[in-house]
Picture 1 (cartoon, one colour):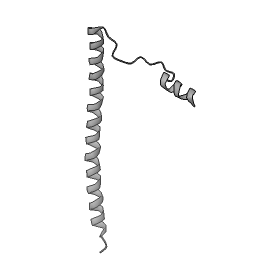
Picture 2 (cartoon, one colour; picture 1 turned 90 degrees about the vertical axis):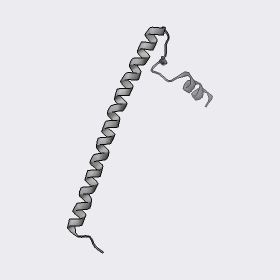
Picture 3 (tube, helix red, strand yellow; picture 1 turned 30 degrees about the vertical axis):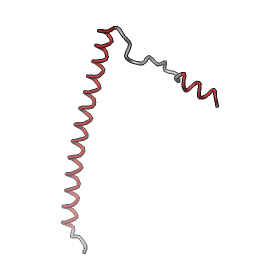
Picture 4 (cartoon, one colour; picture 1 turned 90 degrees about the horizontal axis):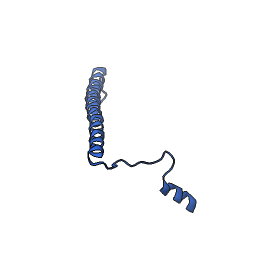
Length: 74
């Protein structure tokens, strides 16, 4: 049975509402994730200052030693 134009419009409107809800939820998740990153970064900074230890890995901008060794073996 073919759908009427009104039914198609209603279905499309329902899909748009669903997509808008999903978009809003994903935007909230992204916002929370960004805030978590900032907080974790601050926690690491405080821990490094307080305990005088390096927590972050200090890698040079070029390839790591593991990748260099792998390339030499080939």
